[in-house]
Image: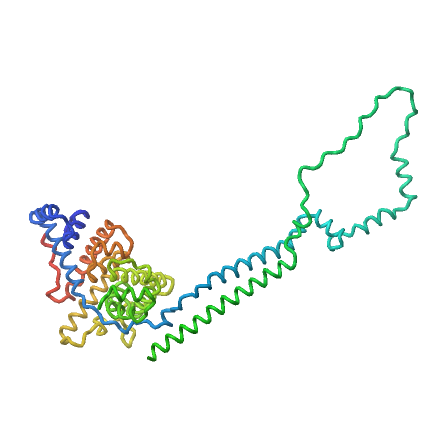
Length: 226
Length: 202
């Protein structure tokens, strides 16, 4: 066993492969001639490489030629296929989000829910029933409570009282309420159109692909037969 | 065989053209896989996978050494196989006899054109070398197989396994060093012509 630095071993390995520059070869060769350890390592590396190179090549156990099925080869896509596929995917996504939006949005906008309920579109609590319940509170129960809660009025005096400022209208709220149409999402006919478009495009893409596959298989089998 | 024309035809989907390339390179790819994996069946599977992958991605071949490009696909297939092997229980790399004992000198490596003595020598040599190759880390084994068995130069190996040139040199030197040490242990098994010199006198 010899004791050389790994850098020396690496240089010897590169020398074996003849990848050193002439100057490096001359320098290393000089060291090999003068250093027995280095010479020993070089010889052993060369012999190990020779052994590897003499390793016989084994015959392939079988023919690795491919057939279209093994190679999972498919014919080229029809030119219109990607367009129909894209339209189908986009229409499906739009349909999904619109449909989901129509279901979910009213729940986040009670105002619109209230409006739609007032329009008789259903959902939420019944305002008419609430109003009726408030109106049906017995008069006898309401009046004594009111009398107790109102303090006795002071006697009128002759003092001149400055006139009260005129009532100003309250400023409108900065945040506009969403219009019922915006919250309601796409109308039903648009949803059906999207679904129809998605189905139609998907069907056309599928048929295009199948037709091309069949043509390609037919061509391939006739080529093999011929 | 006009390799460039065959590659172009294969890039246009001509599987017959690709199969002519398969016939030209299948021995190289199979032997590379065999030396990296050390198992015949797995090597055959890796070779088949490599050719399938090569055909499916042949449009990505942009010139240069087609052999090096193919060897990259088979190396990748071998790495995949080794990863699968790590997840599965290991199988013995040595052939076994009827009693499930490992065969000392497997006849499965024999070439019918050799004399019995030559067969024995070849068996011993191949067995010893494969044993030492199997003992190397995968990265070292791959580099030494590509360099010394397939004859690729540093640049081709670097392109094949996408590793810097300096790393290739370093791995190759380490692999040869370890092989040398390993093969020292097989001195008695090796034919006289292949025996390494005894370094004890230095």
